[in-house]
Structures are given as C-alpha cells and as structure tokens.
Length: 341
Image (cartoon, rainbow, N blue to C red; front, side, top):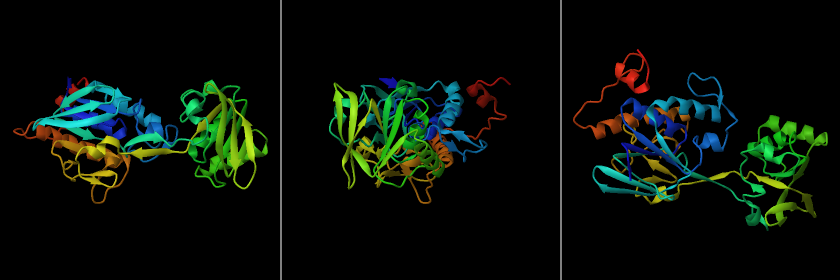
C-alpha cells in the first residue's frame, strides 16, 4: 500500500493545480486518472484548441496549458497513476482513506480530492456490423500518430470540431479522405466548415451527409471497405483502410456515484468555504462539484483548489493555525519550490 497525505482523483487542470497548492503548504499528493495521459478534458476534447481565459496567458492550447501545469508541479514530485480507474474509496478509520484502482493499485491518504471533471470519458461508439473486430486496429476513436495514415484511404465519421479538424489535416497526409456525417448541419467552427466545402469543391476530399455506417468489410480486423446508408437513398460502399470515429465523448460518474456522497444529478455538492463534500475529509474541485452560483470555468476550479488545500492543511494539523504565505517573499515557499533566494 502506498501512503501519502492526499489522493487526487483526476489529472485535469484542476487536479494538477491542486498538487501545486498542496505542495506549497508542504503536503504530498498522488494523482489517479482513468485517462492514460494528464490533462483531462484539455487533452481529450480540445488539445489543439485555443483557450483565452487563463489569467496572464492571453492564449494557449489545451496541451500547452497541461504542459505548463506539469512544469509548475515538478518541484513536488507527484506520482501519477494514469490509465487507472478508481473503483473503491473506503475509510478504515476516522483519520485515513483507502483508494483502490482497477489495476490493483492501493493508496492510503488522510484526505481525498475529487477533481474528476464531469467524470470519466468514454468515446461514443459506432454501431455497425464489424465494428468490434476492427476497433483498436483499423477503427479509431482518437488519433495519436497521424503519420500512420500516410497514403491510406480514410473515412472520418462525425460533424464536430474533432471530425473536421482531422479530416482537414489528413487531406495532406492520406491517399484519400471521405467525411461521413449523419446530418447536413455541423457543430464544428464555421471556418472549418468553410474550408471543408472548399476542399470538397476542389475535389480533394469527399463528403457524404445524412448517412451512417451499416457494415465494415474486413479480414481479421484489417478494414477494406465501409458501407454507409444514406437517408432516403441507396447504400454506398467506400474503399477504406482506416475509419476515424468522432461521435463525442460521453461523461460518466462511474464508481463515484457509489461512494455515498451527496450527488446533485451528475455532480457532487460541496460547501463554498472548504469545497468539502458531505463526507468530511473528501473534497471536490472543478467541474465535478456543485454549489450555488457554480461556474464551470478552469479559473474557478483553480480558486476552489486553493481553498481546498488550506482546508486540508487545517484538517491534517488542527492544532496549528494555517498562515497565508506569499511565494514572492516567503523563504519557506521558496524552499518548497526549489527557488534560490
């Protein structure tokens, strides 16, 4: 069993900043996240999209924000268990919590912070004959290496930003790209839709609207073609080496819903002094929590993480007053940050 002061569930921006705020107060933390990389929604939903409302940073992408936060928490040597879903949260005594994951990791802490965004994300699956055989081989719900699609015939499914972004990028890499969308209206940015129409008019990619996949032809998961059914029309068979499916990500509270916390629909009720849940010692910050006036903004989550850190420090050291110290002048803060005076 691994012991630490605080277990943080969630490696999104708020979870990463929680490490920083706890570290400034001299508390060690460990992060657990079901996603195999840090960043949460920023990594999964908009890694390349610009964010404009982070204080003092006029613009950065989701990935850039994640990297800056990781750099900021380096002095605190936070261990991360990524790609592991918390399955059990227990309290063996009044002073300790135990956290267990689906990979067999067991952690013990004196406080827990749930920074799980809107829960764990699961891609909305395509439903068509042959999907299960091709998933993870030639049918993909996310792109990690665009280069693998060089000189391939690609069919992209979806009408949101991710679908259009990859369709537009892969035009310059793949042998041929076809975008299939179940509607004729798009949720993507207007500029992306305009560029899609330009490339379609120039014959550089094909677009099939009001259609959905019905079957995939393959040999042991190696795709050869996809048949799509056009609404009110005949089936169309598309030669395909790979399919990219972007139907969005479905947030799920998952095991969090079974932990006996005061749940408000798919969020966790907290107070606005400590951001503590209905269970003393368990806190929630970021999009996962709810309180009157709640705004789901990253900067609000940062504020919540700061106040939660002070509350946790006070809980763990009830006989000592927790003083606010400033990183500009405090020798203790400088020592914890590794800053030379």
